[in-house]
Length: 330
Image (cartoon, rainbow, N blue to C red; front, side, top):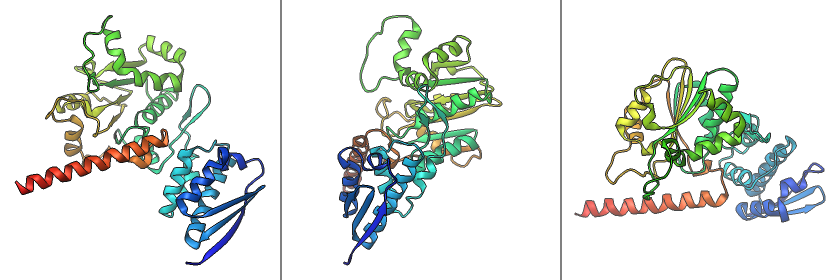
């Protein structure tokens, strides 16, 4: 295998952003692609096989484009660029940076960071009902919230309705003190967190008092017709088929619905059927309903979360194979 050298320049002032603290990002590129990267001032020398050198150069080129647009390079950006380089599709990374949905209360842009997330956003724009299905950390709820708040601010809808089933995550919390609202608030906290971050607590409180933004458990949706609204159902894997049907039949004219869920984190009683599973089987061929599957590659939290998701997926697949084998042998 022949070893080649490739030289490239880094624009002045962008070195630290692209290299990472203590050259962390360069070291990750070296380790992943099996190349040697030597940095001297604003010049980089990349040494390795022709394929590896080409991939490393394409990854660094995309990181330069991101940095020149004013983005702060994160480990997630580097990991995803490396993943795309294996598929020869790394040029997509800087294109994703153009798709700003909105900005948080602190001015931070909210935008898709992976191809899967961009597909999710595109389907939300084009379809009346979108199912976002994937593991923790893929931005399902947060991006849905950003789309809802943007549509609300642009007067595309009159109100936002956020809901999720009030099911405990694998533990019995017992009797909670306070009135009905304070009893259900802990279940809805993730929705509040996203609202406060994107919209701001003051704006949320003002619109909530006017009835323009509603955060409520799924049981509160029964018997209602929801017109001209952006409706988000979170944690849909914890619905029953009857609850899912009830929710989907609430949607009225001028409304858009986003249903998010993680099929690997069900908190339903043992042997209970998930409404999300049933919906995927029943509604798969209906126009204007989209199903977007996000994967561990779309995880945008701490890189360790991606490793955890992959480890659990591998474990669950092994256990499923063992069960299938025992069933076959029996």
